[in-house]
Length: 126
Image 1 (tube, helix red, strand yellow):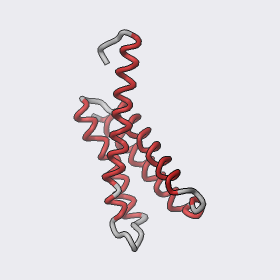
Image 2 (tube, one colour):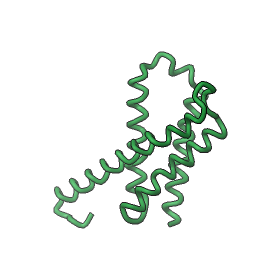
Image 3 (cartoon, one colour):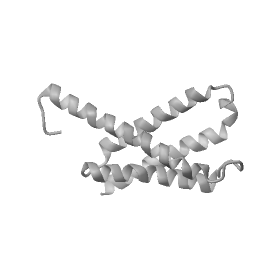
Image 4 (tube, one colour):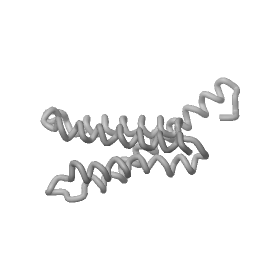
């Protein structure tokens, strides 16, 4: 349980740091196409979800419950510290939903890769 708590806190801190960095350097992203920035964010969230899934302890259900905690904590703190655009109040909190879906997608990829690896090596216990 202690390890899982550390994984959730570290994941939340990393995601919050990414949001803080994006807000602090917002002018650096003005010439980046929106599709590219969304794709990069999706990949980052999927990697975060995959790594968290592999590091969290417990069954699959428990892991899939703990992954959203990272996003909820990070976006909750971001809403308090950074806030949302005045034109879109509470947007940071609404973004929890697609962020969690992207993290779950990464976790599913991690499961599939682990299964594929166990099939290739002949170890069916993973």
